[in-house]
Length: 193
Image (tube, rainbow, N blue to C red; front, top):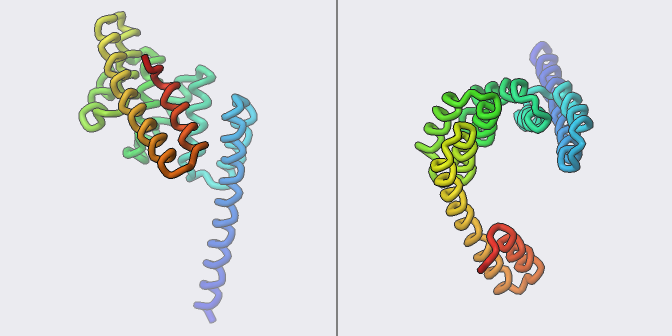
């Protein structure tokens, strides 16, 4: 009988936990919609409700950090990204936003240290080169800023090749709308001469 009571109790806890997680995800998705429309205040309200339901969703914390960053609340955003990086060190986007925060806060040596670490194992992500260009711009090192912007452009050209290949393949498969969509994306990245 004791085992049955424990089993029922565990099942109830699991059911409530799943329900809270689903509710939290609904609030999170509403926050994403508000964020997409640049309604940051409303997005923050939804994120707060999502955290009440399930405080472990890292996506909620990440979006909150981004919103705070875009509201020029760099210190608050940095605190969130620091926690995320500590808990999820593999989460590249949080690491890059933390670097961005450091640049905007004037913590340039910390930003450069973190960028050097990023580049040591992630040398093809254009965002890293762009962050370097921001860093060098803050340091008035225009030659290095230009060099990093050129590296950013080269990385983006690789992305253009991917879009061109996707456009070609979708066209070959007869899915014209997808082919056109990828060609448009490709042309937006870099105008062909």
